[in-house]
Image (tube, rainbow, N blue to C red; front, side, top):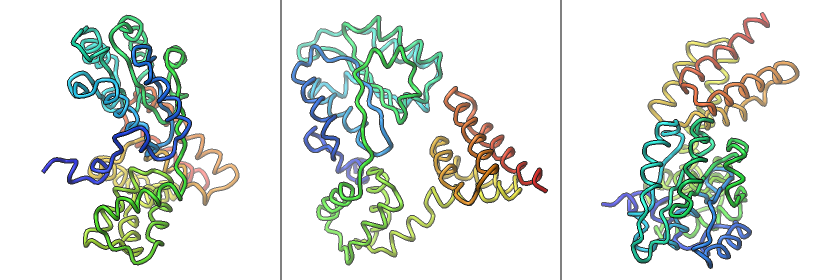
Length: 322
């Protein structure tokens, strides 16, 4: 069975710009650009996870390339392949191949999580964008546009995607639930999903699928699915580190990143949310530590080593206080 049939997030991914959830400003501007495909500039989609950036990029690819989209689109996750070597080899080779086949105005390169690319990688990408602009367009996708160097931003039309509100997420979940013939005894289940995912529609759909294995979506099932959620697990790691238990914190962090596959940037984001119990100088110091290691990850440092060093510094706060 194809993955699209197994994963609801793929099965119900919008295929038309009009079906993209909310993002009215982005949809309007994209529609205007797609009306003149030959003049399409490079694009930069920035916004929070699960807001529709990748879906919009795939829709653009289909609108421009039609049935040739699969063959003439290169999609890469820059957080996994973010170095200069990947840019020079894979992207450069693909982007420089000119193809004048009828119905193919140019090739498309989609770089997801482009803000995770190293500075050197982005600089190399800028040169490739300049050299291949006659027959290749780039769509850069990122959570934070501040992570994209200014020379790249200046070469793109920038679209800012907004975090989805509870009503938008709930309405889409209801569409999926109806299509899957789920029994939903109480709408509080939808509210529980939103509370756990905070506007990330992709994560919300995944959580609903995980919580409805018995073809029924209940608040209790959502609670159980989110009880072992990323946020609660990261908070446990942070509590251990801030309590001075470095070795235990490190063990659980490695489990989260290696076994459960939690992205390092997500780990940092949830770690920051878990600092609510701190105050004063302790809070300021902890936030400073997280910011330092967030910067190191953006620069391309080895993720597990950097998170381990971060936990060590947080644990040292407890020892100094004693």
